[in-house]
Image 1 (cartoon, one colour):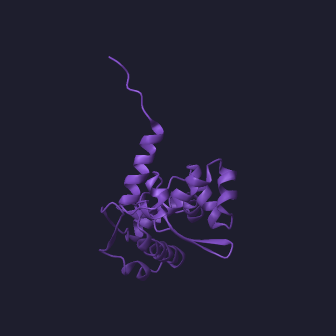
Image 2: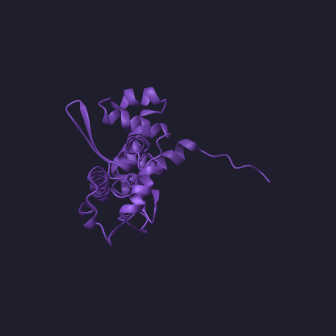
Image 3: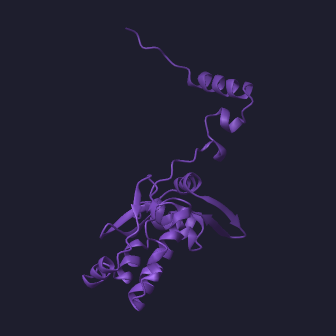
Length: 191
């Protein structure tokens, strides 16, 4: 069987010609995608060990894309794509304003235990209010702080329902064995 000799210049010219005939820009006709063509991925829980996530954290702290990419050892293009796929970001002056609405792992007390659950962007404050009221209960021993959570719960990012732990004895028990050490809770959640 004889190998076919390909004419790459002719193939390239034909690809550009077809793309321009479809109304694409020269860049897109050549095979490059634009930022608008990048699809938003399904929200996933960020991996704090991913270098692209570390670059995103640096950008949230005020670093430029180039600086963040260089510090984490990732190309600027990969950081830009990760930013576009996972967040809503815009450059205001020389600083990035990044809205990150991905689910986050947070701790809740439910069914007598402490769990990490993926929480949606909108539910983060509900978890924070719950812990604030649990803290007030532990400080004052006033069960009225827990009354608003009785019989209610939270649905995580995957759709699973978790009832709030409102039993005063159970919360005291979790507190006494060190499960409710809030400095550790927030340390574990912080990136």
